[in-house]
Length: 166
Image: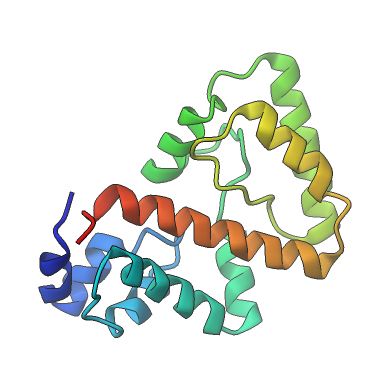
């Protein structure tokens, strides 16, 4: 775990190297957050990542959402995504559960044009499936906003795993 003083003293390139993967395949979030240093505490760092995402154009936000993998996919994942999905039990699904996730992933992407985003840390596969079923009926605007909220929860979890509280 990294100390906040070390985070604040990093050169911008080192900061992006250390935190560029917090936002799935979108190092521009870390690049923007680096400019908001020094952070008073870990919460301020999390807030900086959220601020950069919220202030981004909708097209850039959508690109970040689309960079996330499907849940319970057999595709190669980033280390963070793999660890998070394994922790939620998504790596040990029965054939029936896998088929259900796959069908929901496809329905969701057809409806919204981006993958279902759920910050899985601390959740069970049943909770994730319940959320999937409930959210698939949302409006496009509501689901885009929910996807951004879930991305920000992912930021929080990943930063809390890497940076010690001040």
